[in-house]
Length: 90
Image (cartoon, rainbow, N blue to C red):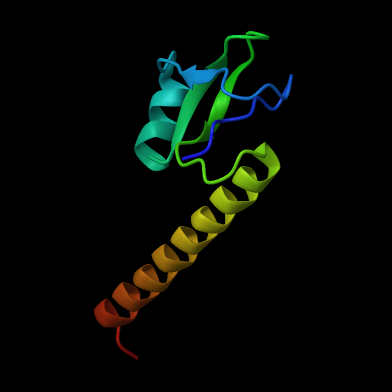
């Protein structure tokens, strides 16, 4: 697993998981379990990032995580449509 890169100061290996602070972050933890709050020890930045880090560069991680979320959303839509058609046949 690659070291995480801070999106603000671009330093490598300074991000560590942070605790959830409010209801918004708790809601995100339930809805999107692959997203977690992180804090940078170099610049004190705090924000949400994907838990899985495949490469060092943060832009690539954002793109990979976005593709995973889009795939999950498409899968959820397909399942909901299949359930709807099963319950309401035409």
